Structure formats: C-alpha cells, structure tokens
Image (cartoon, rainbow, N blue to C red; front, side):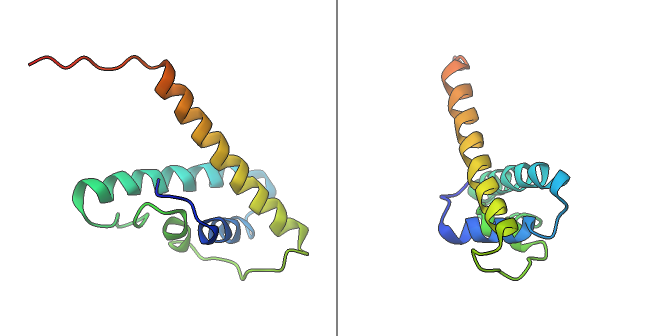
Amino acid sequence: MRLVLHGDLVAAARYLLPLPDPVRRSACRRLIDHAHAAHHFTRRTGRCHPLWGDGSLISAAMRHGLAAEPSLRDSDYCACLEMVLHEIVRWRTERQYTRVTRPRRQYTA
C-alpha cells in the first residue's frame, strides 16, 4: 500500500460512514487489502488497477460512493476515523510480524 496521508484517512472514513456498524471493520480491512493489492499491480504493470486504483487508500475508497465529510463533532465520523487508524496499525503490525517470523526463500541458480 502506498504511503498513507491525511486525505487517505478522511476518504476511508467517509467510505465507512454510511455502512452499518457490524460491517465497518471488515469493509475497512478489505479496503486496505484492496489498496495494497492495487499498489502491487501498479508497480508491476505501470497502470492503475481497474477496480482499486493506484494503491492509495483514497483511490480505493473513491471507487465507491463517499459520504459528505461531516465535522469532527460527529461522533460516528470520529469513530470511523479511529477505526481506519486502528486497522492501518493492525495491518502494518501483522505484516511486520510475518516478515520477521517467515523464513527467507533460498534461491539457487
């Protein structure tokens, strides 16, 4: 996944906002996975992924309809922002853990 910027967080939270509470977490994880897959696709082919964009969260989220951005007085919106941040940290931590514990491939000529 590309470097996560402020706009990525806002777009992901706006994507999650209209979704019902029980599906938000899985939708957030799926969005992150799609952005990561799109990033690999873009690096490999030099083109944006047709469904998920260029590998950024904002690109993946904008492929769906986004809710209007409410103010930070909206506790539901704040909860979505918090969820996006939490899931990004979880995703990065999980990737670091598997990178450390997974044995390296041995290439032979």
